[in-house]
Length: 456
Image (cartoon, rainbow, N blue to C red; front, side):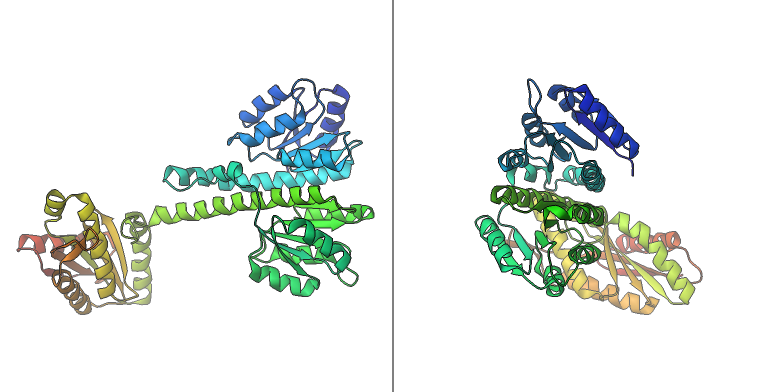
């Protein structure tokens, strides 16, 4: 896997070592010798992961990390801080500044490569979501990027999977002030609990007596419901190789015993905050996809969806030798509604009309809004005679009662003109739509509020 790594250090020997080691793993390495240069490179989108030295003159690594995480354009960049400082308080300070990991010198090469590789994968996955989310923001959907600054990563649901009471009791006590903690001592049960519980983070001990904790991590990564849930391992110092294997499996973070309480709280907050941002990004992507095929006002499928699916439905009907009919609808004199009562009332009428027609047609029928007051209803496996009966029912329910407006303050009476066409003999989608439109125009020309069928 190739990714662009920015190494930030003011000591040339350190830079050369990191540049050579990362380059040997086929990463594209760029360097900066001070904080301002690093911030400028990150702002230009030149890197995927930042490997950042803490002790630098002028602007230290903590300040660089804080500024990166405070800027919405760079807050998503993973940061690995590298320093000779080895106290838990130093690691907590780095994590609170927004760092994703904190490695002490002399750097463990394998741990560095494993961590950079893991964070690069995460960054690439988030980049795709972020690109789509930017489109969602353009459509007026909420921004996930605001969460980075506002969410402290607290009150998340945390599942602790550990079979030693002396261990999980201390961990639960440390987290209970800021998180909602559940303990499951049985790994087999933990899989089911994790899949059903909607957890924000799963903390797994590597020290099970009768179970392989990495197998549990692999199972959680393979399940759809837990695939995106952050995993944090708790390990003994001698578990180094297994930790590295865990990172390859998709584990997000780890701690070695003895566990510092403050570092544990900080790492859990970081993972929960990142998950919440990713969740919103995915929700925005889904909302963007829905916005592309649904009409926001009526909730019906839109013209884009109709154009892409109607031809397929016609082809399926032709292949199966089954009938298919199309109903074209146009609300009569709708411009007068907007001119007389305003567009707000017009919107109320459109929503009410869509709901009333949906209730009058069958569940298998597809109703779409083409634009303005124009609608279509696709009726699979429907003969021309049945289609005319359904269209007449729609016409009747439209005129039977005024449509409530402004919360029911008054009603607006409307009628609808309808044209009906069917597939006939080997008729293509465009021809069916043109035929239905022709029938609709005849309904309007003959006095409106009527159904006209155009035979195939």
